[in-house]
Length: 86
Image (cartoon, rainbow, N blue to C red; front, side, top):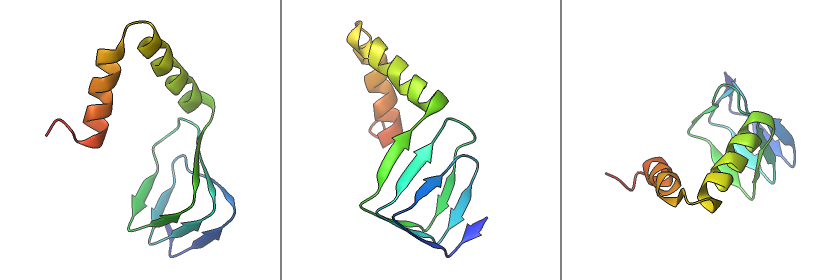
């Protein structure tokens, strides 16, 4: 676990990491589709969220589904992610 670390204008790989009480300022946060990161009590300021590799391919697939008549399942997924179904 990475604890109480300040990241400033860095590229940070997120896969499989556990961050606790960390601050990210002006960072590029990269998720590649591995084990999901954990954030406990972290702060984010002006960060860019980047999706690479498997994560990028998953988003491309969802876009393809959306553009080929599959809006309902993608919207349902977004609703689940945002807690809109509760």
